[in-house]
Length: 535
Image (cartoon, one colour):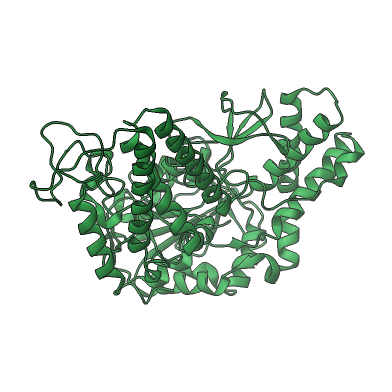
C-alpha cells in the first residue's frame, strides 16, 4: 500500500536526520558514513556503539559521495511507489483561506472566463486579426503576416519591459527566473529590468505572442524601432479586436465551438438558487453579447436566476470610482433616463459603481462570494477594501495538475529535491575530487530543473512556480482569492454548506517536521479516500 510504504520511508528518513536524504552529512562520528565528524551530535537511527571513521583520501571521499548518491536514489525510489501519482484532483477547489459556504448568502460572478469558459480556438483569431490591423491600419511591414499564433509560447502572468522589449517571468520576490527572458522569440542572456506591464488575464496570451512576433521580425531584419511605440501599437490593435466587437461576433456565430461547459454553468446557478442563494452578475461585456451567451448556456429565462445584472460595468474602476451612476436598459438594450433608486430582479443595468451597489443591495462583507478570472480587475479591491470573499477561476490549473500527477514529474521533482539536500549537506567536502563530484551533481540538478520546467512550457514553465519560489502571479493569487479552481463547475463537487480548509504548508524552519509532504508537498492528502468522488 502506498500509505504504508510512504510512512515507512518517512520514518527511515526521520531516523536518518530528516533532511534531504540519509544522514549524509551529519556532524556525528557515530553514524557510519555520515560525513565529517564533529562534536556533540548523534544520529538517532544508529546506536552510539557504532563508531566509524570518515574517509580522508580524495579517491575515498569521491567514492563516499557517490555511495551517498546511490543511497539517496534508492530512498527516493522507495518514497514513490506507483500509487503515489495522480493524488491531486484537477476538479478540486483549493483554499487559501478557511471559508464555509454555509455562511455565504450571495454569489456574484464575472461573465467572460467565469460563467462563460472559452475554447483556446479563440486565441488564434484574436492574434491574426490584431496582426492584420497592425499591417493594414498602422502600416507595419507586410512580412509580419508570415507569423501565426503559437499557443505553446507564452503563459499567463508574465511581465513585459516596454523599454527593453523583454518578456519575462518574475517570481514572488521580484527576481527574473533564469532562462525566461525573451526578446522577440529568442531567449536573451539572463538580466533583470523594470517590469512595466504584467499580463494577468487569459485574453493577454495573443497579445504577448503578437508582441514577441513583431519584435522578432524587426530584430531579424535589423530594423530600428521605438519599443514604446511598438508596444502601444500592438496593445491598441488587440484592443481594437475587443472594442470593435470582432471577438463578440466570432463567439456569437459559433457558440458550440467557442463556449465550453455551458451545461455545467447552468447546473451551478440552478443549484445555488434552489438552495436559497441570491445571485448577481457584474461584467464589462455588452448586454447583447451576454444575453446570447447566457441563452445558449442557460436558456431564455436566464435573468430569472439573477437578482441583479450589470453589464458594461467598466471594471476595475467600477470598484473605485463613485461618480458613474447606474442606467437601466430596456428589452432592446436601449438606455433609459430615469433615476435608479433600487436594483430590480430581471432588469438590466449598465455602468454604475460598487458604492451605489452596496447601498442599494446591502450585500456586504463575508456573506458575499464573488468569482472572477482577473486577480486585479475582478478580485483585489473586493477582498482588500470591501471584505467580500473571492474565488479565482484559473483554467490553466486543470492542465498543470494533470502534469503534476504524471510519474515523470513526480520522480523528476522528488529526485531534484533529494539531490539538493545532498548538495547542501556534502558541500563540507572541498578537496579537488569532491568538488568534481559536487559539480556533477550541480549540473544534474540544473538539468532536472529544466526538464521539470519544460513539462509545463518550454520557454516559461509553470504559471505558479519558478524553480523553487512561487511566481509573482501565484503570490497575487494567494493574496487576492480565498478559493481558486479550474472552472466554476468545480462547485458541483461540493455541498453548498461545505467548509474549505487551507492545507498547512511548512515554513522553511518547519520543513523537517513535515515528512508526509516530503519533496512533492502532496505525498499524503488528508481524507483522500473521502474525496475520491470528485471528478
